[in-house]
Image (cartoon, rainbow, N blue to C red; front, side, top):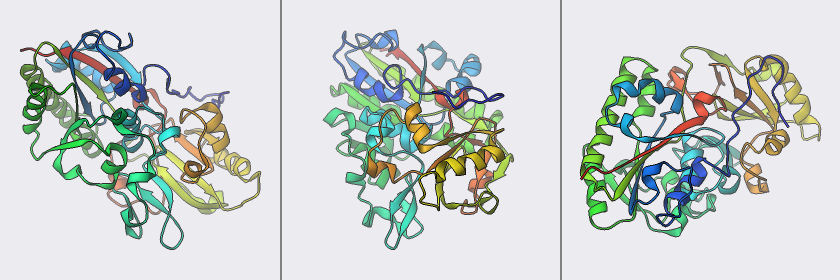
Length: 382
């Protein structure tokens, strides 16, 4: 089944059973010599593995810039697919729990939850709704049912500010948080953990994503990639040759800039809520009749079909965008009609903050720039 109409590009549907973010961690945590062949060669027999996740660095952004990256250009590997939506909350969860979004249920940046008075939209990364901190009524320890890192207590080297947040608890519960305040600490912490015998270390860096959102692609972005390349070099210089450093990302980016498309709820009609994010919106039907989603999709397709793939929830499930059947509790977190941009535009709506409207690069949809991420590796240099 395909939704692509005349003039529309094909959507990149994730390879959830093959080389995909959801299969990376289980593959890396496998016994040396038994790891799947789609992993980079330097990983196959490595006794210890460091997985360095860089937020927001897509393969199509990395490949043309390898000439300026002395360390990353030495890594071997290939692109793999992210998940749907190609957004941090969903992709990082799939990565650490080793399961597609349909299984873990963190199915977007902004999802519907039961608020104190009525259903509300929750920002998953901030774990907040319009009522405030959602931890008092949305338990992050149970909201996501899959077990992170296969039940192993893995050390996570990440910003100290992230420890204890709702999203961290939801997708990394049971992990050992090793927080850093300055990025220069990161390679030191990773090397120390490997020297003490850790078989698998997870590290996370968010600088590339932040620069892309704020500045777009250009000299600031290139400078940030060079800075990240130095982090990679410092890690390689501090790791033994028996250990492999693996670099991947949660999603890529599309430069949108001022190309904002206002979702006109009054013009469309029949919408009770809007969730998701600017590159993949979910429209929620106000009408409970069985054919309401199809009628809404037809209206939206007429208005925005020249810029986005339009699909009802049922079509999305059949296309396996989320990697399988979706349980009723997870279904309630999503809307009835998806608006997934393929043009470099952002679909904005009245509740979006002024700051969010200023983002230059964005992600969340199924274009190659957003969906393909690197999976590259090298052995340590000691």
